[in-house]
Amino acid sequence: MILADANVWIDFFRSRDPELRKLLENREVAMHPCVAAELALGSLCDRSSTLAQLDAMPQARVADLREIRQMIEVRPLHAKGIGLTDAHLAASCLITPGTRLWTRDARLRSVAQSLGIDAGLP
Image (cartoon, rainbow, N blue to C red):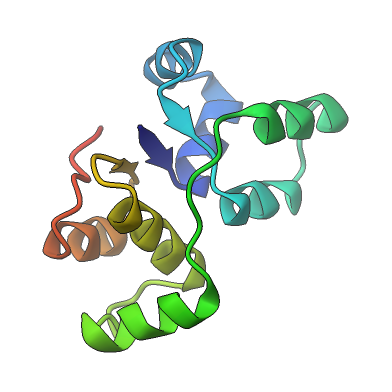
């Protein structure tokens, strides 16, 4: 399964990236509720339908905040330039082996790779 961060989705909504479209058609992409919430804060075309489609996607396993805080301390993730949603995405990948992360954010990619998460998607 693949988790895409909000920036990947924003780019998709702007240009309909054919690679993400194919992955979506094959149901290879999971949605994280933090990403869905970030996207809901933006300006979406056909808002109701788009949000319903995001909610209907396979859902990522989600770590609770206690687990996120523990991960931040145990795997020193503080002062790395990532935010809470980024930490949530990394945790979801860790608790769901084989989940890959699609991000265009260099800091998140670096942190993910340091945690052993495959973040080598385009």
